[in-house]
Length: 345
Ligand SMILES: [Zn+2]
Image (tube, rainbow, N blue to C red; front, side):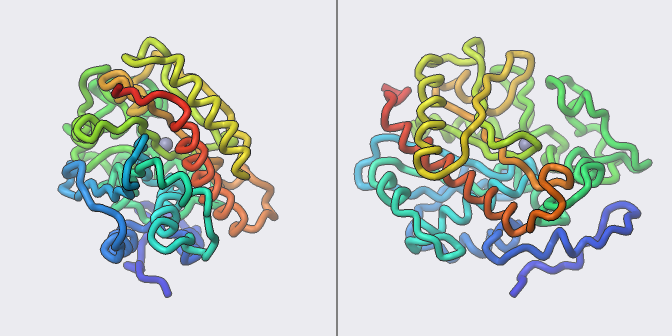
């Protein structure tokens, strides 16, 4: 049964059949309204809120709390709306904590073991404004030029935003707040106020209200580690900030990254590619370690765009690998977190 069917249409003239990007397996639970409904049915997690998005949507977090948490981790999906893989990992993990198995029925005993010591703050939508405007639920099989239109966004004259500006460091022109009336489609990176969700302007200031509120939330709850889940064209990848961007102990962050790779692999997950980003741009994964000294990572799944996998690979296998690789990485990170000191001590 599909709950979400408001007859989405391409926001530009396009003859590809949109239904193939909407008809996903039931367990690929990523649509904004469907997930909101799913959240209302949860009974074991504790609900809290980071605040409100620019568009007034609740920044909901569900916390699964052990009796005596030794470490805590916050995992956010949907920073970029087209990257629905992370949302699928989070909703399936919520189901594990609620019912003992994920939305496909698979059990994850290792998660239930580590959740006796690690508290999980799970946030399906970091950028709910962009997910609510997204017209598809998956980009598996989608040609990259179509992905780009939905991801980057375009002006009313159908020209895409300047690619270099979108992916480069923040400048005042990165935010579209003064040009919203010229947009044909606002894409997957900006909140409803037109602020780029993952480009803080500096180490101290982000124009996106979501990020400023998240900084307060992470501090108020003394959360040890933040990870946001993305996808693009690399094999599963785990990035951290450079030492120049970290107020806390960068050597421990590097150790945590190494340990996460090892534990993820041991758990049955992917061989993560480890990376350290440079200091030319601020990402949320740099902003929180810079302000709070906490650990943070960016995870990237290998998205299913056309060309990333062989054309004859069944889409079901791509969805499955992406939902599960994200879950294995969250599991590996939680296990590894117990081996490094809390940054708050
Ligand atoms: Zn992303």
